Length: 256
Image (cartoon, rainbow, N blue to C red; front, top):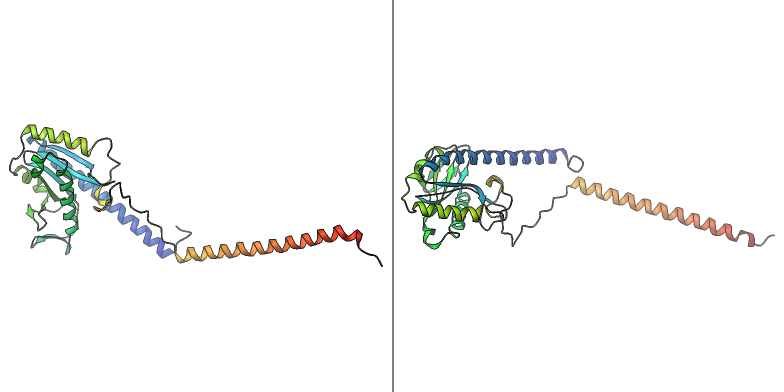
């Protein structure tokens, strides 16, 4: 990178790498905190699955799936900074709407529900958990509720009971086999995964690294130098051949 990029391009690449690293580590820390909070439910008849495979996606993951009396709940953790508000049913962070994140939760919930027996699919729901925002459970226009981590356990315990203890055990076993089985690929955090990641049947095209103008000039110069070298070698070879041929026929040349 130092050889092929200008100083400005190199600084831009390094800054982007640092931003990506910060987002990944921040997201991983958020998932850890939410997992710790959800652990309080285990004494109330809930079972938990963390960082499991997103059904139908090549390398995406689900942060948390909680199975308990209140149903099967897909929890997406977001460790957002800044100002977070919900107004008119829209979730905004620092003034920007976060509809895409809510749609991702809805898609993940539908994917998990499709794995369950038909009689239990209506018991599946999803929510977006804000790790550092003290937001009380609030429903958005997308139908996905948003709740702060400090209110998460109380919210799940307040859900109407739809599953028996036997249901909870059976569905947990089913989901663990489907979401966390040996066929699951290596998982990453959602901080680094686009919800629109294609399925294995349609792997994403490998992006080509853009070629900088400095690199293009360097390639052209090397090609020109190679061409000149070839011409010089051809010229020297021609001279050498001419001298050799002249030496061979010199004894037969007529004398004066």
